[in-house]
Image (cartoon, rainbow, N blue to C red):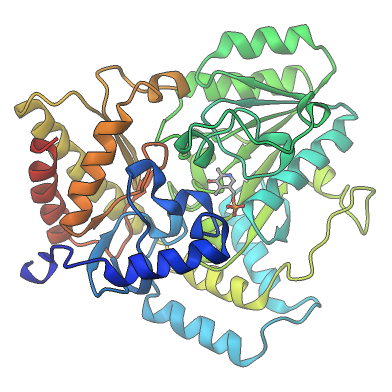
Length: 434
Ligand SMILES: *Cc1c(COP(=O)(O)O)cnc(C)c1O
C-alpha cells in the first residue's frame, strides 16, 4: 500500500486553473457540488481516472469514493467498458434514429425491474423526473405532487423547493427564479413519517397525482427508509389512486439489480433511473406500468423528446456496465462496505467520537452528531464544520470523499481490501485531529 501513501504535494496547477475557470464559468464549475465550498477548499482539477483512483493536474493520486456521484459502480473505465465504448464510437456518435442497442438496454432494464414494463430513455435523471411527473399528472388528471425533504430529484422547477443535495450543501432554501405558482402544487413532507403522508392525502382527496420518493435517500447523505414507511407509501398510493414514483437514479442497479424496490419488495408505478445505467455517460430513464408509459408521444398525448436520447455511446457504456453486474458483485460490495463501516464505528467508540454511520449496500455516510440520522431534520444536526475538517484531513491523505455532508460515498468493484484498510488508517488519523 506504499504507493497510495501520497500526501498532497501541492495544488498549484489546480489553483491556477480554478482562477481561470472562475472568470469563465460561474463559480468555476459546471455543477455546484463540485465547488468544494462546503468543505472550505477550492476544487481539484482532475486529469485522469482509472479503477478506484483519480489523479489531479498536480499529479496527486486519490482513492475515489465519489465515483462520479454513484454512476461508476465498477470504478473508472474498466477494460471491457472501454472496449464497448470504443466499438460504439467507431460506428458513430449519434444517429438521431432508433438503433438495436436501445432494445437490448430496455430489455435488460425491464428484466431487472419487474415493475417496469415499458421504458423511455432520456439524457439525465432530471429529465426522467420531469417526464415521470408529467405522466403522473396526465394519468391521474390531478395536479399535486407529494415529495419528501432530504430527497433530491434533479433540478427541474417543480421539485426544487426544499430539495437536498447541493441545495442542502450550500444551505439554500430552494432556488431563485422559480415562481410561486410552479411549486404551489408541490407538497414536501418528512421522510420516514407515515402519519403526515396519511393526513395530507386525506386533506386533498383526489388532488394528489403522485407520491415521489428516493426509496433510500442518497442525496442527504445516506438515509435508509423504514420498511413500514415504504410499504405505507405503496398502500396509500393504491388507496388514493395516485402514482407511486420511486426515484432510483442512484439506487437502481446500485443496491441490487432490481434497485431498492427489489430489496424492499415494493412495486412502484413508475421508476426513474440514471447514473449507473449510463456507466458514466449522460443518460436517464423513466419506466413503469404500460398503461402509464403508453401515454407518451407518439402514441399518447404526453409530449417528451430528446435530440440525443438513446445516444449510442451512452447506451453501449450502460450496457457494458450492467453486464458486469452479477449477484456476487453485490455481495462483494456490501461486505466491503459493511467491513469499512463496522471498523469506523469501532474507531469512533474507542475514541469517544460522536458520529453516526449510515450504510446500505455499497453506499455510506458519516454524520457528526449523536442523534440517529433518519430524516432531513436529524441529518441537519450534523456538525458541518467538523465534517469540513474531517474531509480536509482525509483528502490530504489521498482519500477523496463526497465533498459534502449531504452526499453519499460509494464503493465500487474496483476497491480492494487493502484500499479499505488504508482508508481506515487514514480515518483514524483524520478523526483524532478534529
Ligand atoms: C442524481 C440524481 C438525480 C438527477 O440526475 P441528473 O442526471 O443529475 O439530472 C435525480 N434523482 C436522484 C435520486 C439523483 O441521485
